[in-house]
Image 1 (cartoon, rainbow, N blue to C red):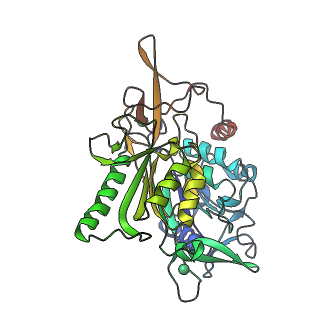
Image 2: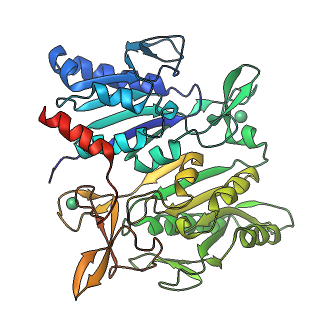
Image 3: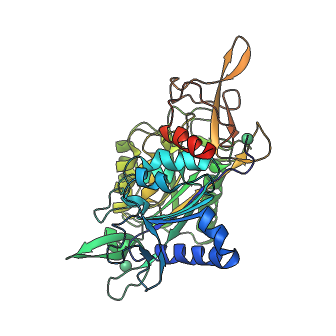
Length: 402
Ligand SMILES: [Zn+2]
Ligand SMILES: [Zn+2]
């Protein structure tokens, strides 16, 4: 069992948000600290050829910095350059790669390679960019970069890109969605028992405290940003149907819902609501279009979710929702198996002949439960019997031997 597993750090954001600059600075600081031979042997600096086409063989930032890089167009090209000595991969333009980039990154992390990569999360049409939902799901460290809104006289932090004639420009949330209030999406994610719900409870209580300090009249159509509406899935009855309760017993009131239209109708009637929260959004039916619509309506939104199901695969709409977030808070628990590493995965159990056994890959994805069915584990301790093979595991294993 490896004790220092690799990880994926994603530097992401809209166009002209300084992603390449951040990557170049990171590479240079390491390059300056170690000897050249070690760097050549253990480090791979790679770019997708379409990531800034003008500077061939170089990763370059829009403010004029650059660094030499190998060009790889596909995951298959990239794996050719990996050797048994590879410890770090710096990869520019991960959003431009084919579908295979996802299993390749997973397999690399499993042999303890550390990956630092840059990507654009959303297209200029506001849709998830290629395989970014899947890449954002397997990311361990999120580093969002804000651009500067190009709307004349604005200059706010930009998290969206738009196409103007033949080029792309950054836009802030307010200018992009053309709303009166500033929409905002915070996603809190992590395995079970990583205290995600506690974050939502704390945030909501903070909003309510502000309201107590500055009470306002509820005029029709008036949006007071401190009045909250927190929604939960109606089948999640673990503690209380109309409350959200964290594993340590903290609670707030919540509205149980079954469908997107119930949320929209609630907000149409309750115009005073200016802050919307969702607990465990992976359980909701089609939450992605709902979140998009609420952003278009200018709501600040706060979400807790499991990004992966017990099998370690993207949970429902959550991967796509991650691409819309301007803040992702990644929570960790303790690995209950090795008790050495932080836990990022949820392990499900079944009881077979009176013995706790890992649940099978083909078991149903949704099973609302607590400590009797689930525990939190690290990447190395996560075990899913009958999960299909990742072909890159074998390719990389062969490279380790040769
Ligand atoms: Zn703006
Ligand atoms: Zn472990």
